[in-house]
Amino acid sequence: MKIKVIVGDIAKIETDAIIVNFFEGTEHLDGDIANIDKALAGAITQLISQGEIKGKLNEITVIHSLGRLPSARVVVAGLGKEQELSQDRVRGAAASACRLLKQKGMDNIATIAQGAGIAGISLESAAQVVTEGALLGVYSFRKHITKEAEHGEIKQLIIVTADETKLPIVEQGCHRGRILAEATNLARDMVNEPANYMTPSRMAETAKGLAQSYGLELNILERQQMQELGMGALLGVTQGSQQPPKFIVLNYKGSDSGEIDVALVGKGITFDSGGISIKPSEGMSEMKGDMAGGAAVMAAISAIAQVKPQINVTAIVPATENLPSSSALKPGDILTAMSGKTIEIISTDAEGRLTLADALGYAKKLSAKLMVDVATLTGACRVALGDICSGAFGNNQELIDKVIAAGNEAGEHIWQMPMYEDYKEQNKSDVADVKNVGGKYAGAITGAQFLSEFVGDTPWVHLDIAGTSMSEKERNYLIKGATGVPVRTLVNLVLSLANSKGGEA
Ligand code: BES
Ligand code: MN
Ligand code: ZN
Image (cartoon, rainbow, N blue to C red):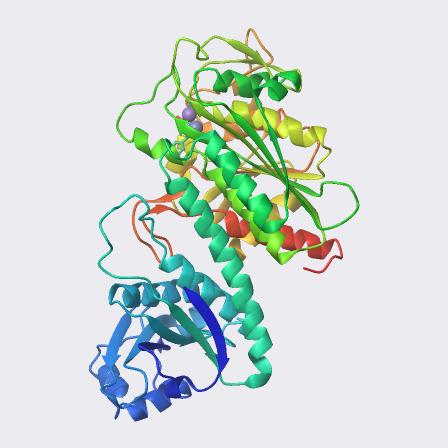
């Protein structure tokens, strides 16, 4: 979908449909919607008085203009109560409207920067979130469906601004929104792709493509280099699979300090069968998405490379399958991580933390100043927070707060979980330094505590996205399947870190 910003009057533009908004409880129409209502001989006012248009959030009403306006249809998108408006509601409303118009086969549509100037939303942010909502809302994954779709794609969305002097601001917002949404959709594509396509090698190839497109530096470590580095924990997980593991490192250099300001580490299990501690067959296909953290950090760094903040970022993805075989890791085995710590394997299904132990160890070895890891780590986190919030765990409150704030801006909810030292007790082993499962209770926390063993004093946040990486149903700008969480959070975080460093994004 092409997105174009133009100066003009939305009532005068000729498209298949124009989108305007309406707040719940509004008594008098003014501005664009009032002009349009007048042109439509009061059709909108009538629908309001008849109760068909209430302005409820995500309510969509389509009115045919029958030649009274240059555009064939007017879409009235409900934005809920004006005082409750948020950027995320605008994203959702834009998504609902665009999705419906796509289903109706529209090619060319127009909107204004919905919500601008209301509830503290700037014009630039409004343009950004409308763009994000539109691109995220019309996303679909049909790559493997040979039958042609019933409806095509919307070819063009025009964002109309009445004030010529504001054009650059709207364009800037639209540009940022496009980068963020496209990166999110890239992560969605990677996660939706089945495991026979999205193998560790394919992830590495994807990284190569991103490096070429966006000027990132790429380094892929093969099994032999993992062995040389002593990545025993990661290698233990790779043991049962025929697919060669890939340790993917992408560098974005926005400053010449030579230091890595932020390492983004993502879990990259391209399929998690559980290994010898095999999972029940029901729902196992979901585990093709166990590389969602890896996809998110790859997509985020590609967006960062387009925004070009003055900061150095490294994305790290230890990519492998977790499968049973006669050479697979076994319960009871003891592995030695790169840091030298030994790990007793209780369950081969607690594999993500093993791969991350060495990926975090590698980030530490590179002297990264901050680390954020993203992982579909525990079913327990999904049980605790559902598909609404990702769990945040860490050793540095300031960084945790920044991650949560970045999430709020993105409309990606993040809830902090406790990290009391007392939980560490559960990970103690009788035969090694730690064990990889901390028992039945507090599973998301003991998983995070396990990771903390490999982090040391480096400020670190762990995001458990086991519940949020996939959506079971369509919701606002999410579609069924991969959500692309937390790509936009990570980009916002890096931009805010770059700003507080003094570099301008
Ligand atoms: N990939 C899973 C976690 C997961 C579960 C992600 C559901 C998405 C949806 C992870 O590797 C896993 O198997 N975790 C185990 C840990 C346990 C053995 C300590 C779990 O949550 O059951
Ligand atoms: Mn597992
Ligand atoms: Zn897993």
